[in-house]
Length: 189
Image: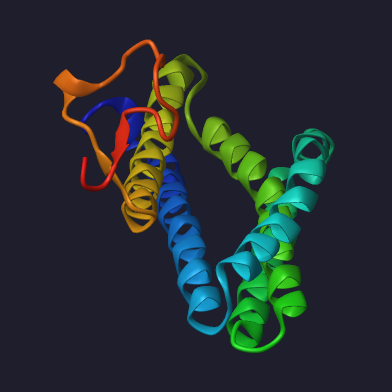
């Protein structure tokens, strides 16, 4: 980390914040799943996830457009507190109202659709123009880390549904023959 990019305190701090943000988003999704399932059914969890993700997906493209028109630090000053409000609503409502839980989750995700592009733009602005390619690679590492976390989480979900990983030699590489999760067999086979 001795390159000029990492010697920039602003970029290093923003990269660390991005990493912490990715980990906290993952942890929020895990906590939401565990919390809803502790008090409600799997169908209720599916409804909460759907009610939270659909609005966020619809609003998502607007986040980048807003960041192009408004200074990114201004967007972050609104989006990050909105995410915190969504977390508080989820935490308070998770044992009772599924509607309030879904609303809090939607607020959290929608605010993230604005905070993400704003934070990314700030990271690029913090890097000298000659090092923006390296900055892109460093930011991509955060995405990779959060992808690994999602993979671990999804692997646990697969196991909970009665599916186990198949050794590499037994996988059906072309996807022919049999249904189910690619690269997995039902438990007991």
